[in-house]
Length: 431
Image (tube, rainbow, N blue to C red; front, side, top):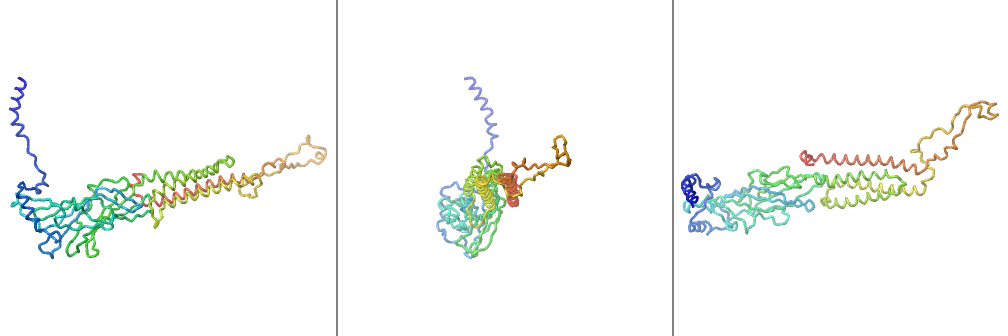
């Protein structure tokens, strides 16, 4: 009990000091102009005075000959999908749309110092923004059921429609998987002309709120305004570059390994009995690989990818190696032991005649009487060194190994030289 009394005395002594040091919370500077009224009757009166006789079909101008200036800013937040097969580009973002409404204005002092009000978008006039070449065919910007506008006392209206915007984007697959694509989001005011509404995008498009995509990288982002069909159109252009590290390690590297494994067919001995099965196995591996790649490559018949041409060349070389292996097996079975008439790969033979010195001890009487140099014919000892078709085919394997190796190196060098022209330093650093 004494401890409780002592604690209460200490608290009563220091409480005024602690309370005096606590500062009241202050509103941010940006929210000072957003002051709302505290009088319920005043707020109802404000809405009645500003929206009772409001007609959403009429442009908010006292003088209808004046043009409504609509300023827009597109803010991308993330690339959700870029389906190159369907040529569909989807981006999550929102528009900041501003215009001035001369009909909805009031004096804040008359309504409890209320500076801003929030009104559903269906209750006031708004520009009918339409996205051109929308993938779903609708292209209407905003949601009439949920969108809210913020109106200040001087008539400044702010509308922020957020959604997933999907457009049709032409895909160029020539340099896949090191390709660069350009997709554009084009929007305009559908029911107005340049004499009634002037649409503009005064600010540059920035990526302050953007989240990086795992498959695509934005290299540049720009905007452009132009006049088309008597109304202003705004283009927000995305230049994208594919992140090629995934395709490099899952497509290109296994393909090169399979290509160099293919030429090892010519190193398998003919008599092992495994050469034909090895060649067929490599060919089937190419078939499975092409099936997997065909599901990854974009479906486009207007352009041919250099990567696809590279695959076709390697597949053709595999077909040639299989045909050669089959023909070689047939020749070995039929004429493998016969004398080969082709002399180009035949090794050079030394002279069959050998000159030996005269030895009287080993000579007979006729030779002693005529002591001359003896010439001995050694052809009888070399009858087993005949050059057969089997030997010829073994030499041909050795030569074809280097021929196919040179072709693979040549094709690979040509492919990568073309691809590297499209690859930036940042992409190489990622790989």
